[in-house]
Length: 456
Image (cartoon, rainbow, N blue to C red):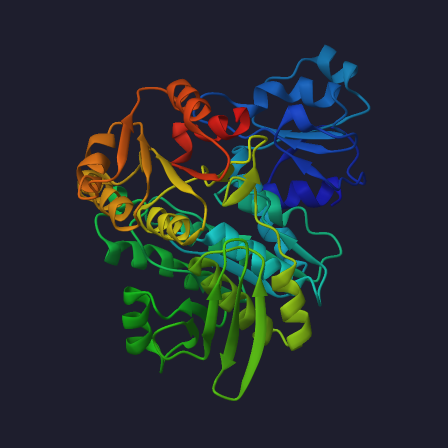
């Protein structure tokens, strides 16, 4: 973008710099600034990024967009070869720049949301589309009101865009979809994540459906085996273009002859009873069958061949901290699923753990956050899943660990260990882990269980 374009889009004021100068790469972090970047000083809860405009320029940034800072004449002389733009609100400027950038691209834009599985579904969908299009995707889990526009600003000569949309409250996806203007929406499922903020699963569905509000022509892909999405489909299938996938409920694309393995799974994708495609998923667990079905559906919508779809699924890689499986030096296996946790994702991970053939199965579980009045009930249900899936050893930490333990006690053969700190978890694992064991490590990100995985 030229500086003049940025001023027009953001209604900003040029403090120093040339209107005809061009900038290309946007950054919001002075620690990762590259030479020639344009830095946006976002105001957060604990600090104002605009305060670091000098560090950004000193680190190689070509330009900065900041809120008003009363820049002195001496500072203007010091940075006379740079570009400084002042705006009323840097966050709003970020939104407007992303909207402007998005309008320059007439390409497929797939927006993915859901209670669980957003990131892994994004990974698989993006890898499928990359078999035909040069595809940009959300990095990591940058799925909020800052991460999504920053992703859009990375568009260059791309031919497709896959973005993830997260939310904690009503209105958040409405904002994201108005910025991204998706051409296809995906909802993976409606579970209990953030139910403490929204009050009910029905309200979670309502918040997720805000994704349709940014679309010129609503077109959506849904998991038809999810109870609330299935009911919504039955009520709206004559009014909106809805594409369904599933294993149980009759859907456009269904998985048949499923063979679940520890490291991978295979199945036949049956497409409207007209054709079958053999699919190899490089990660175990039934939930990845659903992710693959979604990838197949998106691929079919955008005209990919069966071979392109097969390649896209068989070669995709997960974002780290999500079902990241590694073997330790002592022969034990660690499943790092420490990024986030909800009842649904806990249940899926424990079911996967049960189906492994390792000698002992160990679950290290921590709190699931943002569940509000449902916290005790859902943590106890997680404990019931521990018992049902015949886990050998349960290690718990957190405010609701007693509830997990209470639910798990039905399994009389289960060894239960309660600890107070992550260091105690690490010490206990070092003490008990041996060759042939598998350990699942899972909790909400704020529990910092990823530190345990790193140290192991």
